[in-house]
Image 1 (cartoon, rainbow, N blue to C red):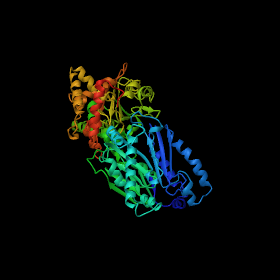
Image 2: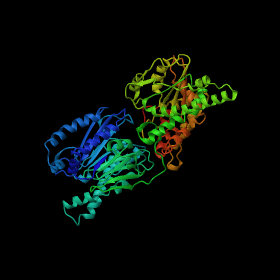
Image 3: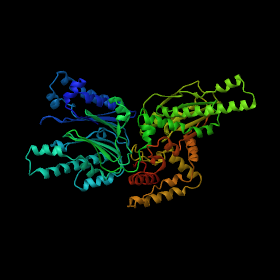
Length: 618
């Protein structure tokens, strides 16, 4: 989101173009453009258009090239009109996509629903500017059915059953109610058009948000703009989804990722503020900037998976956290290697794991230094420390190589069904000649292992072509055991390799009856009305086994037939995660400790669907 705080001719005079904010929006979107993008959208509000002129603009597109497609459609008419050196008033009133409020959104598929219908921003039209609403966000709601029913019960008729449409309807209803409230207060004092202008000037966006958002259960950053010039961004009370902003006397900028703002605005880290959980950044029609407490700040549940994987690694703190995730794996990895570093090659897969890999290498180098020191002291104590012996000890180096090369941008754990399986087999190429066949262990760190599809169908087979004696796949995150209903909404339990491994262990050990018991407990939980009494019954599936036992089963299940190397998998511990990422303790996808009642209800429902065989349900 961008909000200009000065007249458009100010930016023309200072920066040489009326398209200053449009250029910034393009850069913000491209800098936040990650792999796996399904679509993108842009919205602009022009606050000084004349009646009869459009004042809310929107452009959306599908596909990985959506940003370029959108701006290729926007820029030619804008550039053509600006090339004629129009007056400031003409630009203010007539040039499309040049306004005061800008909204950009990049969509990543989270629920399998695809198509332009699901691409943000969404637009609610009305003949009164103050009742128009542009909305986009980063969110998943866990109580959509409850929200939908509430909307229908008050007479509204949503066109589509989705959390996005329901949010738009709820916010739109609250906006209408706010307009009506002010109208009733002023109708005896003012006549039109002064009455309409007064309503626009007096909209209480904080009141509007409080009237609609208190029923929301989920993780979210919801952004909106009215046609009359108010702008807002509301963050959930637990801070599950991230939001940062920068404000000075010229501009307000908000984005999901801090380094994006740093780079595009060329400002230091200290100039950027994290939006407080439960609060809304609000910029009024008059340009007043404020942060209002809307929902109250709850327990800190900032999403750790954002730090492990989704957020840009160029963020100063995230970079250090990801390095710490790699370092924290070293003690257990050294135990698995029996300190045999000379015959071990270290690498990483995919590219997003490179920072954790650097941290792991730092920790391994420290261990190697420890081993060297111990060798020197032993030789010295034995009186056999000679220059050649010392040189031989110091010559030991870590064997760090680029083993896997990823040649397409694909989030294989987001892609669906057969297309994911087919693509996964062709994601990586291998570097030959760096492993001693039959002698070396090959260690490759990944940032997460969710389904294990790419490992089984591509990576392990690919690494085995190098003929290592042993392959150790290291995950910088813990075992992903439960769905994340607040972010990437993978709600089919049977897709998680950790869950499948636990179920397999139960069956192999003669404890399959537990699966039925958990099912019955989940059914009982569906009748619980008190949110404080809800329990995640699925935890019982994992309870009989240690993390190491589940990891060993996962390794067995992910090893394809015909692989000659022994395959092991080492996962980050939850304690190691929290030590590395202390600012973001949200770990429900690892621990099952959901921050809201909606998450607990949905995980129990997911188990019921699994047990009953409803694989198509979410």
